[in-house]
Length: 417
Image (cartoon, rainbow, N blue to C red):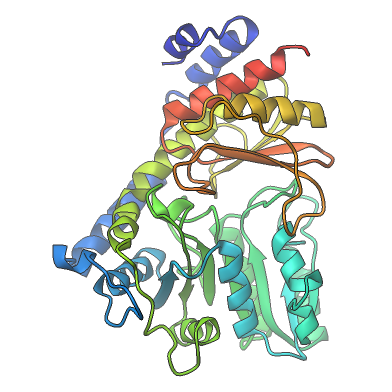
């Protein structure tokens, strides 16, 4: 395929040579976890017993919305949770995370992040923005990861013994930070540590970008709540909007009461005809994620071969759908994003430029041409303009599209300006 793409789109020279080698390096890779995930999702659908009439959904208040009820039940099955709430009205992963943190952390107590600083917009919502959680009387503390990128379990134990902590927070994915993402097994050790010292402390996990990549989800490994977006992994590139919270039933109800109203909780919420897209997107999600992983492994091999630092390296076990590439300069970031943009199915003729994004301190460069705006299960990249000038490539519904985007980005880096 790479030779054909290179011929069709006039990719020559060093990029073509390295790309052909990257294809040889990654052609034999297999994704056994995705086979397990496919079986899990198929089993959930058969156990749920959806009928065609359940897909219609409701308008208005959304009482007795069968599409919503079945979709949330499916999510709970797939994510290994007691219960899930998933709504159009939860507009982003950040919205879901902040709502869950606020619902689970009492004013006057401490929220402790044990995976370092959260991504920019979330940390802003916790600490600095008007009406932030800190502004509502919640103390916030964070522990850095160790030098090898793991959770510092002895430091976690010391913090739990030193102060009244209500909630521990873990961000699985790297966000915009030059660190590796965390595997479910690593997070499981942290849950066990927390509960051994302080059984009443709640553990909440930002699961964005990580859903269905590994055989298990954080809720199956001991997390009290997990949160994420529906226009990333779980949406299968079809869900039009929304986010979810899943885990312990009582805690999910607590979050619903904060999002809507005490006494109403999760009983309301129309799907507005999009229930079919949510449910079908979840059905397709394992296939889409496998294509994404194939594309990211090729991207890692290509840019490693071109001399750039990549994390993770091709063929390593992944815990999310994000590929970091260390380009080293702002100019290279701009060339990469412009090259990737030229391969997009939508807005391919646009040129990305750095700009201010709410919640981010530094200008951010983004490349995207998604059918669903902001859907990072579709091929995209983000790059804050700050050292070490890493670009974060996400998604790719078709592996072939990820290959093409990578070839265009690599060619843009090779052409002098």
